[in-house]
View 1 (cartoon, rainbow, N blue to C red):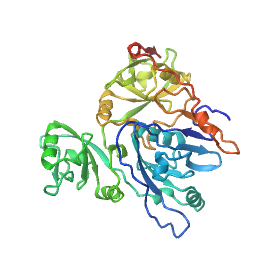
View 2: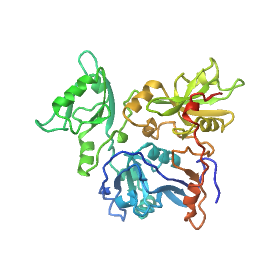
View 3: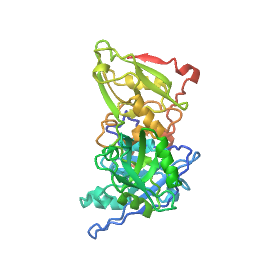
View 4: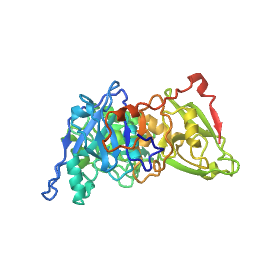
Length: 420
């Protein structure tokens, strides 16, 4: 067994997914029928996995030598994935409605990790996957073109938010939106005729029309809506799946993460990394004391930015020392993914990680860094060369053997600062 450095060139990688304590819908597999010109190619299957505080998703995701695609392995007997119907050898095609078969493996892993307590997966059985590849099929064409709801943030003008709400009299939670042409809602990406699912991060399924109107009024000058077009709403409704913001298309949002690529100068990068609290007891790594004219300022770094990823790897959950090690891993250059305070506050307000919404066009997770110890509250990650006999039981042992570095005590954390 050989443990490699980083994702690039890995023959296999494996991750065990952990869970947050929230309720969700526990649905069986749901499939989308497709006629593939009469060939012996099966149908994609959809699974909405919702975890509890004491569960794991119950599977591992592999990239294997001589085996194409992102491979579902080690489905735990009696675990959540097996109960829903995931099978050993299935190939993962979609995560939260986003096609991932063409993505680098570590980016797919990151998307599942960022999903938190609930993830929507589309898979194809291994034989059908290999048959489709052999026939030169475009696997993305086997899936619906767009099954993502849309997350939109609206700032009202003098005439209001630019939309009106209608619904059946006396029926709770069914609200359709009419959007004024060239109004704030249309400019924010709300499609006319779409269905309202969440308001400011909260479901409207139990709201009456009067209650919804009151909540809109209490929103002040800004409101965030999760909406679904008719076809998207129908897709989930017919399959008994709950639509949540974790599945959303966020391309219309004004809140973005930024990539900062820096090459170290004679005086260093020119910034200070500081660990501090940023709400609800969470601890993050922040950028301060940016020196004028040095690489950090030239790359667009702003004071108060929070670091999300270093050299393509998420640092959410890592302590200060581990983050410093990742920055130092490439001695002469570093790429940081950061978010400004206003954008950070928005994602916290809806209870989601901004890393969840990085699609294949985003620059965030493309580069690699040598493997470093995992934080004590996140899943173990291991990169392994699979031998001719396959992974075997030693694979899980390897994944669980990573050294854990304990975070410093809370009273010490605010004093952690490191200049670069």
